[in-house]
Amino acid sequence: MAFSPRLTGLIDALKCMPGVGQKSAQRIAFHLLERDRSGAASLSDALKSAVESIGHCKRCRMLTENELCAICESSGRDVQQLCVVESPADVMALEDATGYRGLYFVLMGHLSPLDGIGPAELGLDMLEARLAEGEVSELIIATNPTVEGDATAHYLSDLAERNGVNASRIAHGVPLGGELEYVDGGTLSHAFYGRRAVNEGR
Image (tube, rainbow, N blue to C red; front, side):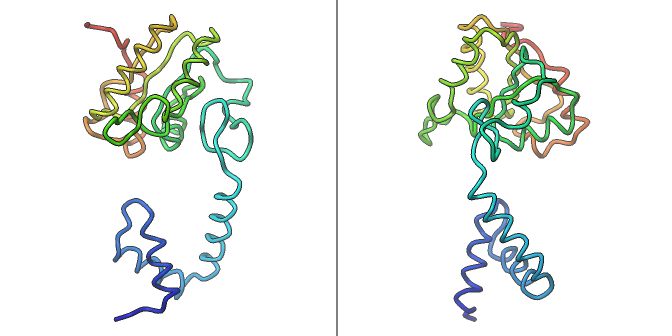
């Protein structure tokens, strides 16, 4: 059965979201059009506004509509601790699950040479410049426990060592192959505070 062009366009647009395939996109589209048109209009307005106004913090690369995000602007954060994560979702997960009061740097991914993602794409020149400023005394590496996350963590530990900064990595508690945004708060908190020095045991 052929749907109307606009309905088909809506379904196709919804499939851009992670985990949403053809059937899920159809269900969402039908729900919005049949039962929640005001919600659909609100969602449309919020998406349009977000896409037009949200960019990256020039200090940590977190998503924000301002030059600096709220965390970087806060005077109550510990500038000596810098936690490196793969995505903005990881920042939110750590903020919700831990009492961490330091700052962040968001890579927006991980090293993956096969996909053309190297140090430049992750903003590691920005990170190195930040470490060279001398304020940071501990680099907390909170990359995901995947092959790519491990490779990225190794690169980050070398970067910290070159700049005379201690490096630690969150360890036990996070399942191998898991992603931080899907780990429950208690497990994530335990892993965060159970971090160990990167060079420990070498």
